[in-house]
Length: 112
Image (cartoon, rainbow, N blue to C red; front, side):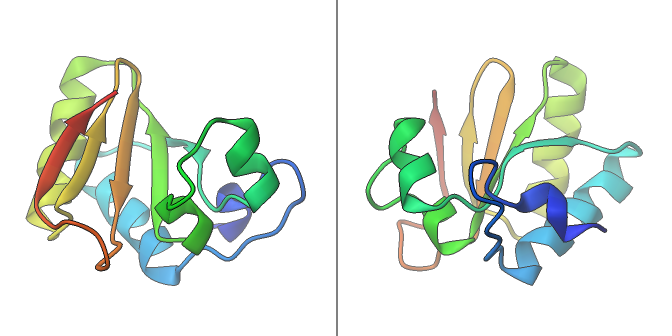
């Protein structure tokens, strides 16, 4: 899997944790298709520009946002994430946020 797809879009910096890249690859294998990464690692400037939290896990390379507009695909991706031990999940209309930040509340699902 190309790590470039996780790079910050404004500066190209990429401090994505290899476990996040592997997590996405594993989920793609489970759902049977490539998923679009809309946000991986974020530098502080880009995080501010997109309205990200000051404590965003994207700043540490521990989170990914996947663009998923189809409900069945989103359901399968969430199932794959849970199966693989990913328990920090944010759900938006066309977005699935997954993170592995152990310094934050475990086993949570929130809505955007």
